[in-house]
Amino acid sequence: MLDLWQEMSETLHQFQEMCRKKVRLAMRNMNNPDSTFDYEVWVGCDREHFREHMHKKLHSWNQLSGQRIHMRMCDCDHICPFRIVQFLAAELQEDACRMLCHYTNLQPLPGFFNRLKSDHWSTQDHSIWLRSIFKNPEFHDIYWPAHI
Image (cartoon, rainbow, N blue to C red; front, side):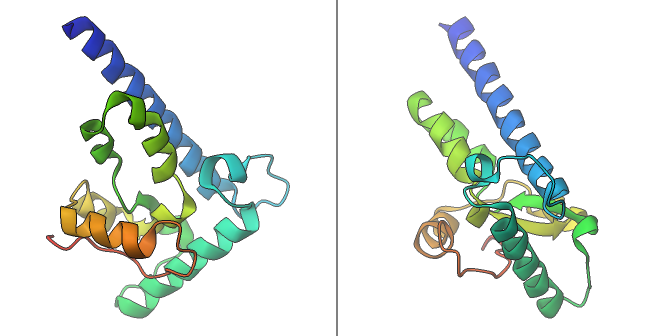
């Protein structure tokens, strides 16, 4: 039984890493109109919409913080962190990973703040995320978890 659990954990970890790589690739290619990256499959919108969404989020950060940043200075943060997937039933984990790569769950953050935010997440954050952020193309604010 332990071997099966370990194998499932390793498979999930590999899938999560692939999703993270695809999101990083989406960020790198968003200004390249010749890119063949399939944005619809990996982040749920076309390249131009993804680019516009991330720039609106960046603008929000620049207006609210005293620190002006550019896209090249940012990590791509998953608002709802990948860590929550491990708490789901095995049959839900792959779909959850795909949901977490949806463009409405992504935001640019300076690396320092992305590491500070890390995997902090609460039931309050999750409720806000489901109600106001996930699949809401009009939410352009940078989301910071409630208990940091």
